[in-house]
Image 1 (tube, rainbow, N blue to C red):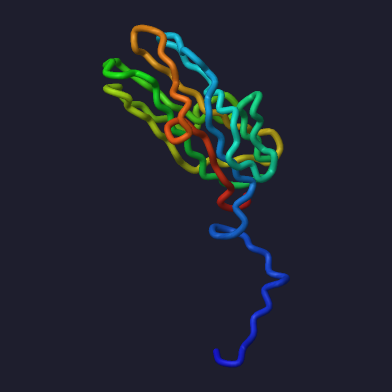
Image 2: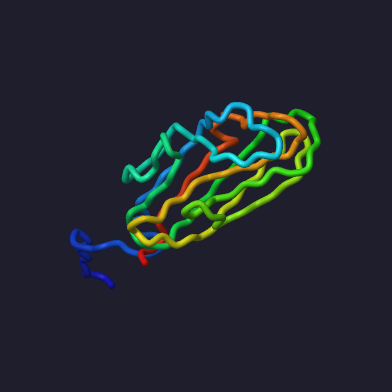
Length: 158
C-alpha cells in the first residue's frame, strides 16, 4: 500500500526462488576414447560455476554437504559422425547407484540429456555423471562445452 516501506536487509531467502546454493556447472570431459560396451564416469574437469567448492574436478563428484532437494542435469555427446549404433546411456548416480537415467539410439552426433530432482542428506551423499556407449568400437566423448556438461543447484532444504 501507499506509504509502506519494506526493509529486506534482515530477510532470509528459502525455498524455490531463494538461495539456490550449492550450485555447480562443469564441462570439458577428458575421457578420450571410450571402449565399446563400457560405462565410464564422465571426467568433466573444468568449472564454469562452483559456488561452494562442492564439485571435485579430480573425482568428478558433486558432494553438496547441505541437506535438501537438488535439481541436477547432464548432457553427453559422442563424436560419432554418421555411425549408427545401438545405445548411448546417460546416468546421474547417487553414491554409485543410478538416480536419474536416459537412453538414446545414436545417429549422426546424437546427444542424450537427463535432468530431475534428487535428495541429498547433507553429510555423505555424492553425485556423478556416467555414460555408456555401444557402437561396436571405441569412440570419444566430445569436449565441447555446449555438448557435454554436468550441473545442478539446491531447490529447497530438507
